[in-house]
Length: 116
Image (cartoon, rainbow, N blue to C red; front, side, top):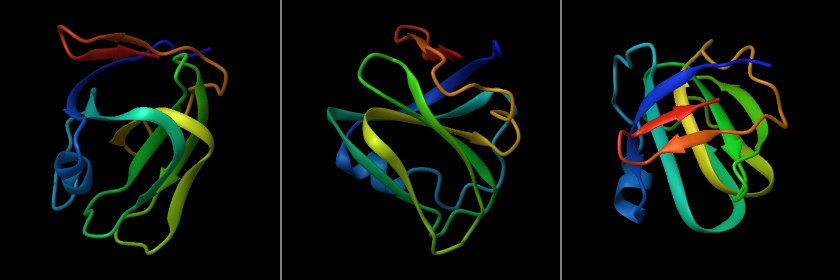
């Protein structure tokens, strides 16, 4: 089981979720974007207009990581959660390589950090 900590920018409304990490050319190690949705649902992400490779962790309403994927920049592929999830964490590619599905994510909303 991995223990990593990330600071994050929050995407919790439609506009910020659509903007996401589009046109970002550098994402520092240990930093990412946490997408939060009102209700658990099947989440679908694309990499349109994203310039750098990313890792994504899909997180359910109980904070359990349900799926981790590597996403290629600019590719038209759709990356989906496969099960209803409430959150998704995107970070620079390679940072989630050792994260296990089934692992719990711990979020500190005040400091905008997530530990997985």
